Image (cartoon, rainbow, N blue to C red; front, side, top):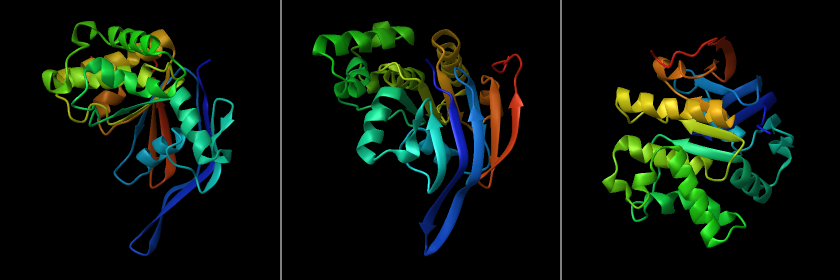
Length: 235
């Protein structure tokens, strides 16, 4: 069952230069299951912080962060790590692929934490690469791939564990327009065909058109939520 995401009175602050900076300020937000969201706002508005809280990479100072049936704020670090490995896939702007490993080996990395045999890990990684159209590039290393292909490997890695939620932080920031559109179309397919809940941070209004809804943040507070009745994908 894909996860719904629920935040209630979420506050998060960081200390910087002897001062306390409140990044999220009593934020309330509901996100529907199996929906593709774009998260937008100026630099410093709390987008990446929100992404990290939903993904269990960080914890709120106050409030409830619920993904599916789990309250992440109530978990210990070890419990969060186990939960992340099973339920969340991450896609980053910088790809974060290991250059000495092949595409298939990079996709296998998160599966090392799962109770799978070597053969099962390999099969699961190959299925994920097939889903993103890279069946013929499984044995290529990152330096032998284009930027778009590297990002598709990163997406395959994110879905290899069959997570409920995919979190993407500026996934097309380093790509040209045509390549970015292809990656965004891939994310939309994962939402439509595999019913993944996707939350994507972006500064690009055209990228946001691929989402079902766009959430706007400003200075740690929720702004408007726009709905794309028929997402255009920039076309």
